[in-house]
Image: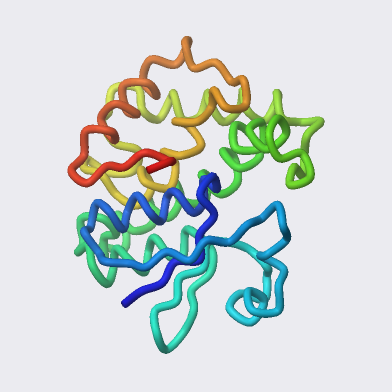
Length: 198
C-alpha cells in the first residue's frame, strides 16, 4: 500500500489527498508535524532530503514534490484524462502545473503562510502584488471555460484548487473573481472530492 507523509493543513499535501480520493487509490497517511520540525527529522530526511511534505512512499522509491506526485498518480491510476500523453495537451497541463507552483505559490499560497505560518513565508513583502497578478491570470484563463488546462478536469485543476479555495485563509478576497469562484464549485462537485480537513 502507498504511504503519504502528510501534514493535515498543508495545501500541497491536500492536493495529493484530493487526487488520491478522486482516483479511489488506497493510501495510508503518516502525519508529519511541521511545527515540531518532524519534516527535518533523520527519518523524514531519509525519505525526502529536501525536508518537505508531501512525500509518497510507493515501495521501491519515495516520490517528493506535490506536482510530481500528482503526475505519477494520474499516470499510474488515473488514465489519460487526468494527465494526457498527447504532447500538445501534456504541454498545456504542465504549463498550468508550473503556474500553480510559481504564481499561486508566491501569491495566495504565500498570503496564507504569512498569516498563519510566518516562519514558512519566503516573499512576504510581495504577497499583495503577486496575489493580484496570479488571480488576474487565473481569472482570465477560466473566463468562458470550465477547466484550467483542457476541456475536462486534469491534474492542473487539482494542483490549483487548494491555493484558490483557501484564499480567505490569507485574507484574500475572491469576490471580484467570478470565473474562479464558478470553477471552485465545479471542482467541489467532482466525484471523490474531499475538503482540506476531513
